[in-house]
Image 1 (cartoon, rainbow, N blue to C red):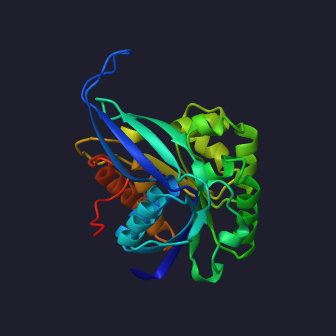
Image 2: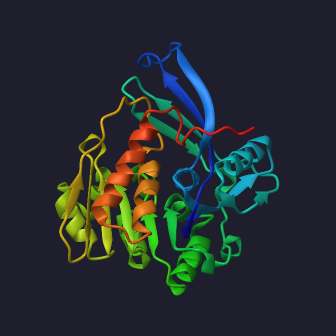
Length: 299
């Protein structure tokens, strides 16, 4: 682990039930599939990829009082991720069913379960950390929103840069673009995809969307799938990288892997171009796997 960097990750941990389709779904008929379970949740994924990339990480999250929660904690330990141990009595650990089509694209059906209810008391001593990554899933969840906003205020007061992933458009729509844009005022770096940038800005052109978002945050990174990614820091030139060629099996978690690769370089004050390339490298590793995290032995 790098002694110089430690990242605080705040947000969901989930049990992913991945359904890898063998052929397109025909409604009302059986469809052959390969089904498996893995650890998931955006913040947990980022923390896991960071740890496997040699960067110390700490995950603030909650699990239910069930076997799924115990399994997910054991998996985090195997990755070397430090984590809070908040168990919610009587609650189920969060679960998401991920349907992966024959083209590798995925559709998700989440049940956040015990993830709701994060508060400032869940956060460790901030003096140990270099930066904080926050998944907006925890902000959009009404049970966690007030607590996470307090956490953001505390992190900002401590002088730590905040890196935010705004979650998917389908989730952001629950609070609206205006509320989501308000949250950006405390954020240093924003990592999002093209669809999310369009929703937040109304701009279809990612360069125009970047320009608008830079009015709120210091650095914007837009992931563009097979087109790679672009990024810009306020007052500096825009830079772009291409996607790495790889066999795409499953896109679940690719954005989280990208975020981890980017943070590894960016939190160490590395150049933006190198950070984007590092993000693209981990994303390419992720899409070649079933599941959202790197492979690791848990026994």
